Amino acid sequence: MKLNELRDNPGANKKRMRVGRGPGSGKGKTAGRGIKGQKSRSGVAINGYEGGQMPLYQRLPKRGFNKPNRKKFAVVNLGLIAKFIEAGKIDAKSTITEDVLVESGLVRRKLDGVRVLAKGDFDSKVTLEVTGASKSAVEAVENAGGSLTVKTPAAAE
View 1 (tube, helix red, strand yellow):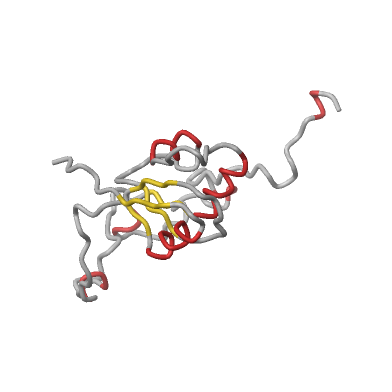
View 2 (spheres, one colour):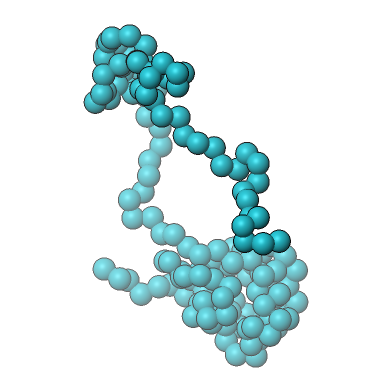
């Protein structure tokens, strides 16, 4: 293969339609916008408008509530922690904190803390220190002979 033989796959490159460029183009004169009226002109913003009728998004009832100060946790499964311990990325002998999980690459960032869930097999005797954990995760770690402590984060306010 030579540089001059390089080509895109057939159909990978499609030329864009240039509208309003004469009758031969197939999209000349009105450029596919029909004739006259608001929608044929530029600067039209009538997306939610239903001709004076109450728009659908206003007719539907409002439901629920979004807590403005809710906490977002980085979620980790016990199975993944076990995998990282086996791979030698996490040292099981020392206390596993949130910072250790971030350094090992298991968690990208802590957010408001790390929460441990019980998905996966876990049989290492470890000491975990995290912001949150499910009851089944705490149970699984204790069954393996380790301990999982849930620390409350220091108030940032």
